[in-house]
Image (spheres, rainbow, N blue to C red):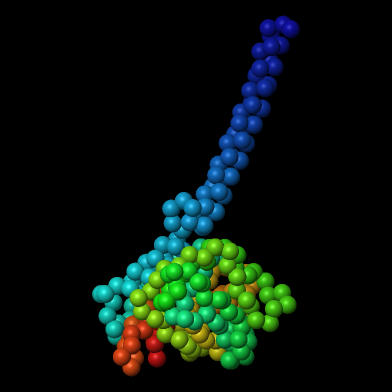
Length: 239
């Protein structure tokens, strides 16, 4: 093959090779980014923002500097598809009148973990994956979680807690799609972000009104000689 034709062929192939290399590099970077994001959400590489927020929340609630009678604001940064759940001592989490259900009707429940962190005390847990996304034919959402990690609380979480007036106070008195203003928590609390269509039925909070990072209220109070803590949308967390 004449030298001129070889040079012409090489010139034609070079741009094609560069394009293939660039495409390969872009694909590799995209895959690494997806794997990294999934790993962070699962707590495999460092800590996800959900885990960091939950640990900070536990640290604030357990702090000896957080005195009875105090009320503070706390930021929650939660990844999509994850949740932060508080369990009162010896109680399962339950949401009543949530997701447009009538007041007092059980809407969703999550069984208390049997881990050492929750066995004999209140605790706060992070659900990293496996939350229900659709209601299906369930009348009451039996909340599942594929990966749950918990931290012990030194003081019990107040229960039950009526959310209706607190939701109105925080977000206004307008009607919310898929969320009841008569909702209440029993046995703890739940904050969830973009898990699916049943978020409001599981948490009792107006999904479309939640702006992230979310500001919540934490309180500590002594009632009949016993200390309690509360985590809720607006004051007062402990009536």
